[in-house]
Image (cartoon, rainbow, N blue to C red; front, top):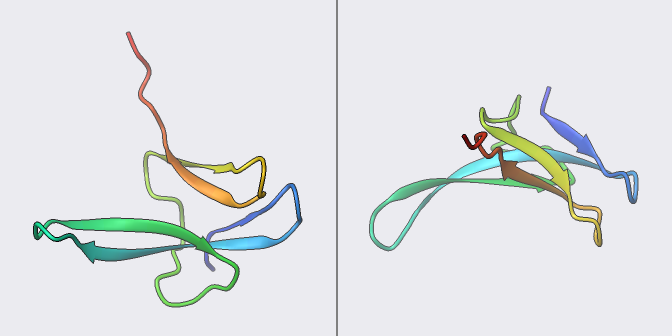
Amino acid sequence: MSFSSASKRNGKTYFLHSRQQTLKGGAVVTLYYFASLAGAGAMEALPQGYEVTENERTGLPLLKKIKPPTA
């Protein structure tokens, strides 16, 4: 079962995906994105250290890195 998030604004369900992207300098990064259909790259759970927020204007879910507490 893929990780999903329902929009509070429009009620649609979005599924979390990830893919590897090679940058021009050769570094490989992981991109996370939400799509309306679960497809290739769909994830089972949230990656550690991230939380789901929602764009207030569009209602689209966003993945945001959790900031560590400051001392």
